[in-house]
Image: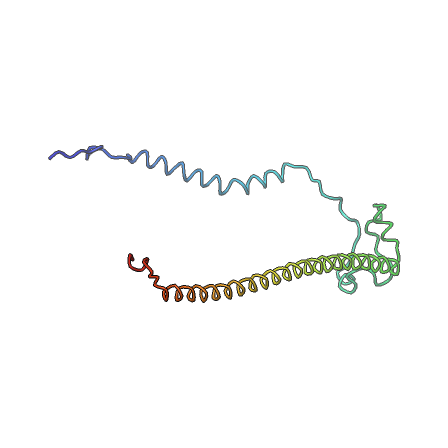
Length: 183
C-alpha cells in the first residue's frame, strides 16, 4: 500500500529561522504601535508653537476665593480681563444688573421650554384623537362582521333544516340517496 505525502518526514513546514524572523518583526510592530502614538503626541506638543491665551495678570488669594467663589460679594470684580474690551464691559456691570440679566435669560429659556412642551402635548393629543378614531372604526367593523357572521350562521341552520325537510319528503315518495351507496 502506497501512502501519499505532500512533505517528506524530514522536511519541515516552517524552519526555525523563519519562525524567529516573524516573531522579531511582530514584536517590533507591537512595540511601535504601543509606544508610537503617545511619543508622537509629545513630539507634536513640543514642536508646535504655543497657541494658548496670554497669562492673566490678576491675583486672587485663596482666602478671598473661598469666601466669595463668584467674586460678587463687594459688588465689583477684580481687575481680571481689563485688557479685553468685551470682558471689561461685562465686568463693569453691577451685581443687580447681572442678576437681572440672568433672571431674564432664565425666563426666556423657561418660556421656550414651556412652548416646546405645549407643542408636544398638542401633538400627543392629536395623535391620541386620531388613534381613537381608528379604534372606533375598527370596533364598528368588528361589530359589523360579527353581525354578518351571526346572520350567516342562522341562515345556514335554516338551510340545513329545509334540506332535511325536503330529503325526508323525497324519501317518503321513494327517492333513495345513491351517493351513500357508492361511497
